[in-house]
Length: 350
Image 1: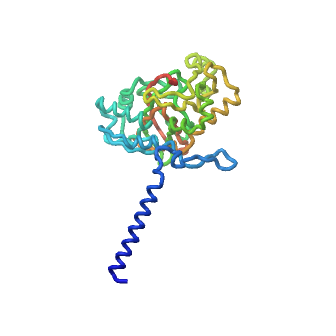
Image 2 (image 1 turned 180 degrees about the vertical axis):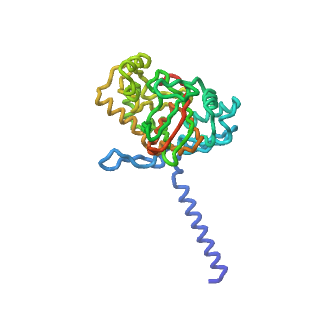
Image 3 (image 1 turned 30 degrees about the horizontal axis):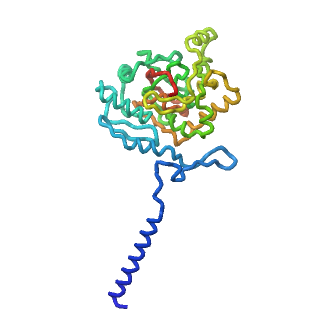
């Protein structure tokens, strides 16, 4: 075969192969929609003989893609986990920030659920002034305050004072009107340990099995401060505080007042039991089982973001959209944090 014939033969074979590949591609179905977890086989499956599930959490994809499409004018944002958490840079919280910047931060908080800031040295007055730009500040009736301001709770841990916040919870859900959010400032941190984790309450709701979600839809959770703070009070003080803060019922599934998205609103720290919508208590065994099932999604790492504290780091979280957990792995080292909490609205289901 001549060189010319060989080249022609090779060209013919390549052309035929190209037509075959093209035809094969045309016969194939279109690629699945990446936003649809069922279309790409993103299914959770239980391990044999266990209720532990493995597999991709496909329902996170749409929210992750939405967050990646956001753009910000007044500061820079870096997403830090799949559906929650963003590190914000380019602004100083000690400054008297213009209203448009505050409005953008409020929008970013609603989107990312928790915002992280580094290298933010703040006086108590500056801390209070920044938090107050987002609403009225609450005074906590049980936790010690910074001596300079009753609105700032001081968490000072050492060899003599251990950390007992290492459980998943929303803050002050035992109030009729719980916190909207909180601004936590790291005053002194250990060389290692003492991280804070946050879990997405919207994604936790999406993680529920359909039958469980249907069962709890419309139920109420009764929240009570006694579970955590009752042991610190004398009988007389407990009776007085009970008059001021009686148990309160909030929807198990609540609607976020800013975003309109539903989220779980149950935590082991403060929920004593569940009731029907009319206030009729559930059977105690079923109530306990449901509370446990509703709290388990928050323990899923894919729904979480973890903050490694540095001196003068600040976390600003949406107390409705996330639960948080303060690691107590640094004893007997010192960890000092200060928190200003912003009054919110009463949880409802729309």
